[in-house]
Image (cartoon, rainbow, N blue to C red; front, side):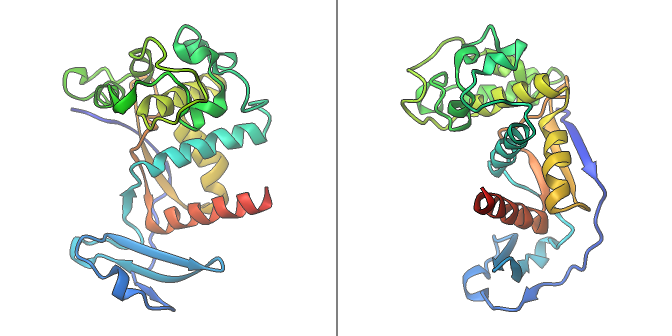
Length: 240
């Protein structure tokens, strides 16, 4: 099946060498470890890459569910610039496409915390939602993040009462950002966040046929940029 991908930034040509200002080889020397980077007092003191797998500073790596953190950071940037007035606003206030879904009356804060009450327990429907959003298997050629969200027709419990780790909440936030800004999560993340911590960085992020980001995962960046992203979050939290 064909995957739609958004790409932003330019490919880097960094020094591929490791860093050993402090030695953590005893912990991270492992054939299955692709990359390990450690910061101390905002300085990179250790970097180890799996040379057998041709991994180095320039290799873009799939962040898996850390992509959800990038999604949340994109939401945060829209709160900071005033596009979103409050995390306690209802999703339907910002997204027409979600107004006829169970997410319409859910607070943005609860969706961010996977506490929407929409998603069924035991991660039921996650695989199907992923296939619909990505355009996999029988959905090949018709990737649709909104359709994946619409698959969940009711609520399983009251919002704010129980965290439930599930893909649907992340996909709903992707729709919200797309309809609020006219831009994908990938573009907002790159323009508002990546340019702050890695102005020369490059990202790829999977998208559906409409240009909405498949936000539950599928974001790839270089290991140094993932590392810098973590430091960016720490710095923002400290600065409140």
